[in-house]
Length: 578
Ligand code: AMP
Image (cartoon, rainbow, N blue to C red; front, side):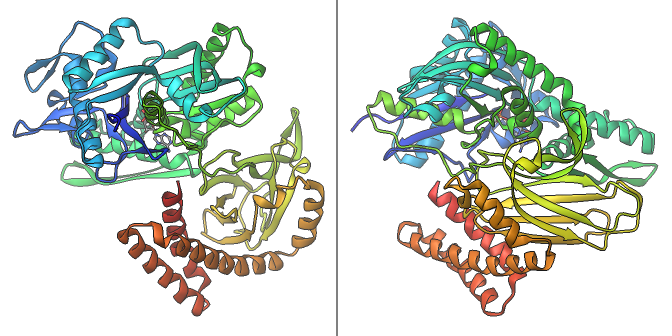
């Protein structure tokens, strides 16, 4: 038997460990978490903390905690943790040792070899320090590969024709962009550029400043001296950022944040995605400037790039995808979890070194973009049918995205929601797949906010709902087979068919919703039952419970009750199949 070689992404903010088993790449979870925050600390009793526990104590006990050690790798320096000095290699070794232990617990054997990824720009000294960290952790680093190489391997391992890929990697604390050439499992980095101090943490910081300004204005208080309140704000800021990746608004609520003369102060602040996007606009522009510098370094222009790969958790920020689409004219890939992609590539490289076969790691994605139309602009001119994409092509299924729209005229009591599939900026050049009317809106001036949510499941069923933000009034439809209906390429006949199906009748659309919810429920039960033989007893028990709940709803015609158990069962199936 070959020695096991694990693949490790030793990141500035987060680290992961992955392994290839029976041709399948698995990122190994520790207590259900695949991501290990790259934090090391010592607790009150002098016990070593690695990961989330160390991150949790960072804001309160920074003197006992070390973060972002990767930035110091290769430097002849020391960091102090609880009064003791450590080299960057030693701190990194503590993280590696934990990852090694997580992998050993998973495979039930000891592990002594690893492939570790490093940024393409790492110097010899930084690479040497990484190798030393491995040695201290008891790991022979059989190969060190560049992070963009690892990411490109995941997407292009089976690629026979040469492809040029742009790997856009925006993590918590660093941004790297690389242009690579991929052919037959060989990846060549043509050029790299980036910023060592730009990432999601900076986005969080901008939200923190926004919150502090709000508190200053509302209560006349400076929060900075209050460590625990600051820690809560920092956490709430990141949470709001994550919500804004999927929703148009996030509400930041922290009760009993502070006291003023014995009176408790509660924080409530709503942040709109558009406001957040304005806050981070300069940072996003900087990443695009860096992208053009990398292209120039590779002596290429945007149209020479065949594919864009998104890596790093911060690439889930929707405006990044949008800006890249504008620059390159096609949708970036996002099939593989951007947090896990590099570790998966490292494991694939490890398997190749061991001479193992690797199956494809790509998961179910939507091959189409879905969106709506609104009054806007086309080619710089006002236009009533500007296409607004909501769920983007290549998004991993299931996917749920919301966008906010505003009523156009004063006292507008209804909106007609039209749903399209396609990517043309003129909605009328895309295929209309559904339409419904939301009536009885509040009698208010223009600017009444309607949130539109598109929810596309693994079976290609698209749930669409429109909700008046002020009143909570909601109307929804379900579009069956939103994905597969166009596989044949018969777009125009599909268009006619759909026009006929939905017409102008909102009632008819409502009826479609009812029957397809039931059909979807029956389908998901079938799919779950087919998996029974291959799943663990624990998973099976969860699935049986959910099937029972769904069956009860079906028997009692409780269609509203179906949604949650069907979604949960779909989630389980999704994880079992991926
Ligand atoms: P990484 O270093 O690649 O693990 O990325 C970590 C960064 O990604 C952190 O700043 C996270 O807050 C950020 N991140 C994770 N998920 C999301 C999300 N859904 N939307 C925006 N940022 C995210």
